[in-house]
Image (cartoon, rainbow, N blue to C red; front, side, top):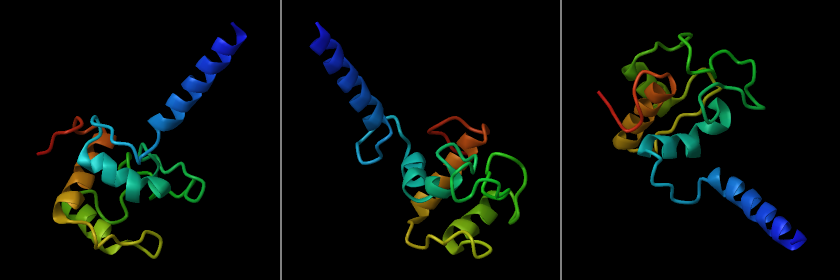
Length: 120
């Protein structure tokens, strides 16, 4: 009986660990969330709060508020994503136009302005 509990605990731990793994295909994740997790989450956090070890307390790492150093519109965000900003954020010129658009849509989702998988 004890080994069943140990096996269950191990399976539960593995399931929780894999749920956060970005290498696995999760059909519920939008293109924007996938690109976000790969390129943006390390600094801005999974939820866009900026509460990451390297950027905690950096007001511009928080993307869910209205404090935008480079403007808070899609055009400004595209420029920052492509070119980087202020010597702190690297540019991502390798992203396709579709990936950039998807990331911008995901930022809107993080900000509560859209629901996942929609754009306007």
